[in-house]
Length: 170
Image 1 (cartoon, rainbow, N blue to C red):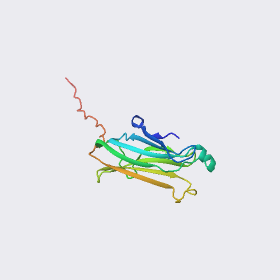
Image 2 (image 1 turned 180 degrees about the vertical axis):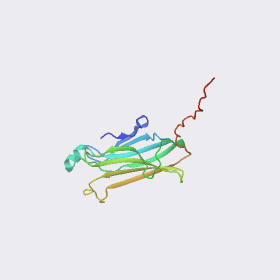
Image 3 (image 1 turned 60 degrees about the horizontal axis):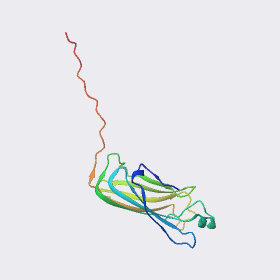
Image 4 (image 1 turned 30 degrees about the vertical axis):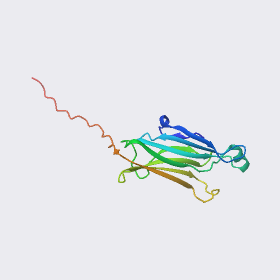
């Protein structure tokens, strides 16, 4: 399934793709790169593993993919957090990809750590059913962080000009 990005299509690209294990149809490891549209100077790299459809059919589970993704990030110059970046403890989603037709997704969220002067990216998978998971967890995660050079303040709403009352001219 194609990933859904939050306004990052300009910087999204496939960096590498390689075949892994498998006799005829091999597993695929894809490495994608994308920029964060609200933080200048950060490059994110996401690695993602996919099984071939034939292996899923043989296993009797064509609707799911394993969650074996990784995430790293790097600074490409000055790192500047834009004024529109969400600064709540929940952060903001910058990447989302459906990993099955039902109930599973892969997501990247941005968390702003103003006190630590960093921006943290968390990659996690989320699913409703944990019954067929080896460790019985609904979540798997990875993270990376980049030091921030500047936090731009939120834009102030425009103020209305105060008009002087007009006096009648005689």
